View 1: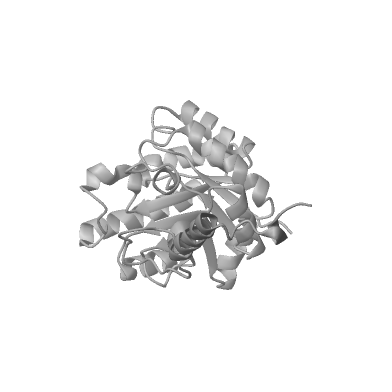
View 2: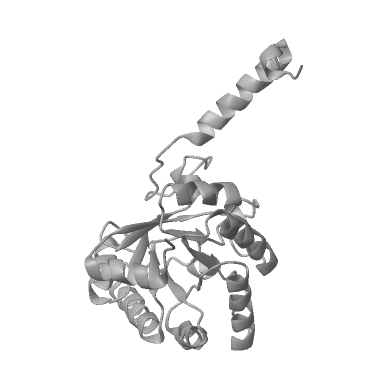
Length: 264
C-alpha cells in the first residue's frame, strides 16, 4: 500500500515518529523501499554525493529530474519528495509552477523548497494547484553563502523567533511538513510542539516528528568529514574499498575467474 501525504499527517496526530532518507538512484531506492522507509527524498544533496559539486548550488533541474525518474522506478510505493534546486523557483511563480509540475511528472509526489515567509505565498500557489509542498528551514544549503558557511541557525533569540514564525507561515500556506536543519534542540522541540504538521529533523535534536539523513552518511559511504549529527549505521565505504582490493588481488594472481565462474 502506497504511503501518502495524509498518512504522514496522520502519523503526526498519532505521535508516531518516522524516518526519511535521501535516494538518488533505482537500486538504492529499491533497497530503502524494501526496508520500509516511508519517505524518500531526491535531495539536491545529490550535487555533492553523486555529482561531486562542492555545494548544492550548481545542480540543475535537468539533473534533478534524471535522478527523480530513477528513484520513482525503484520505489513506487513510498512517498517521494523532490528538491527544487537553486534557481528553479526564484525568478517567478510561473517558473516555480512549471518546475514543480515537472517533478510530479517525473514520479515525485511532492516537492521541497527552502525558505520561510518569503516563499509562503508561493507555497500557497503550488498547493492550490494540487502540488504538495515540504518546507525547509534553519540551515538551508542553498543559502550557504548568505550564512557564511554551514553554521547552526537560530541560536540567538531573534533568529529563533524568525525560524518559528517561518514555520507557522509555511503551515498556514499549506505545507504538509517542514524540515528543520541545523537548529538547536530546544527550538526544534518548541516548533514541533506548536505545529500541526510534522517536523523532520536533521541536526535538530530528537524531538522532531521525523528524522532524515543522506543515505551516503547513514551507510558510512561518506569519506572525510561528516557533521556532528551524523550517525553511520554501517561502514559500507570501508567494505567497498576492501572488496575492490580483494577483487584486484585475485585478478592479479589469476584466482578469479576460476572454473566455477566460467561457462562450459
